[in-house]
Image 1 (tube, rainbow, N blue to C red):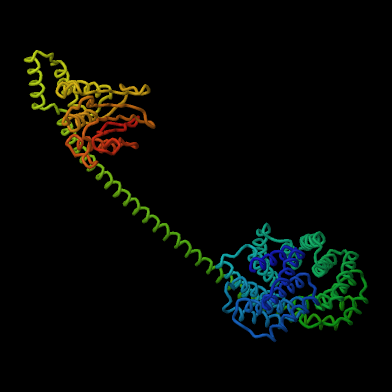
Image 2 (image 1 turned 90 degrees about the vertical axis):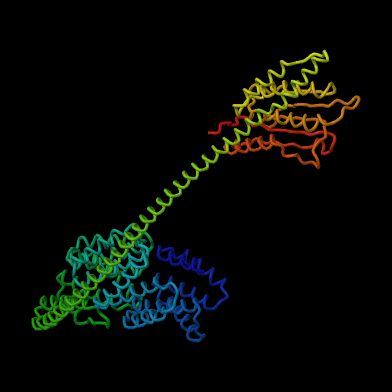
Length: 640
């Protein structure tokens, strides 16, 4: 509902009354709660007020008042807001339509009292304070007017409200200084208000031009005043402004034409304005128009006509001192023009007393207003000092926080570097240990193995069978070469294995079958791997899988090395048909532990890892084992 209420306020402020009424009618038809219904009825009454439809406003406002008097009050937000809205509307009626300032002040002050406890009431308080300030200004109580405007301005500054609020308050303060005749100060405030022109609605601009025209008029700057009033009139004519505002502007223009000696133009405007104000029954502007007719008669040389108007004129209640002053000056001029010296002297005496009273009152109110202005400026300066202090405090805190964050970052960076150094030191030590173990593993052709191989060759020679010392020699030579390197090619690894298998084959017997299956898309000269890794797989297959089984007729002991491509990597498999793994688990021989440690060390610095394993073929004993290793492409084998 708040959103729709704000839409109505915005539409009325922009002069889009049809759009406002559309929202109001829809809400009235849809609501089922009585308080909400009458709150929307208050919005309709406000629309009537903006259009200066006095009868429609009063009927709607009275209807809401009857409901409030005959229904139980409550502390609900809707009921609370309804009572405040009704009081504000009632005060606005007595201020602008009925011309009864005391009643207007009463209802607005009641609205201020009822606001206590109403959530988010700052905009309401500012509205009521400006309403009260307007009433005091129109009633000549400029000190009280300025006081309420300054309170409203202080609230608006503290709450950080929009330019819309500041436009209303600035124009009110400007008008107060205009009414007091302090045109230096009024000029400053009117200039502040003019700078807010881009944010003004059409109605705001109308008020600005009308009141700024009055300021120029009171200074005797009639041409500038005429320009302002004509701008306001043009705006009303283009936007189909209310008859009320048009009548007021034409009243002001009539006075300007009289001062500029254009009697015909003034007479026409006076006739039009008088017809409207007589129709609505508003006496205050009629009093002012009567004064203009006296001035117009004097301008046209009709001194007798001016005297008749002066005799017939009656002063209504609630007239402003400034309007009385204008009337007395006109009456004095009329008496002088008709050589009524006694009446002129009597009028001049009253005029002098009123001028002195107004002058003294203005001096007192100017001092009071300037004091309030000083207090307001002092408050703003204090607020700015607090803001600056908060900014400096926040900057100091931010600086300290940044320094703390930097210190923490440096400490973390130092700890990270230290941790990295320790890790590198640990890694280097591990690498050295693993390298030593790898050397031990690569030198697997132990003296015992050499003795057995040599003994086998000697027995072969004694039996007269051929011997192959060349294979043993090549194996020893390549083993010494491989002992000092961590990385080798698959081609060199398989070549070393060929010599190793050839020697083992002589000891196992003729039923041993060794095969290599290398896929056509594998270039073994470019495939890198940790040295002697496949050799350990082959040695385990022969030593623990094939050598210990008894030969059977027609069944060969088989060893197969298969190399293939697998998803951006090279897969090397070593299979045998020996005993297989006991309970499906591999015995952790020293060679396999060294392979595991070496690969773990290398994997730490690579995104893709080498993976390997050993398992039974088909998961059954007697069908042999399968050892495998997956070597990713572009793998980094460096350890520094």
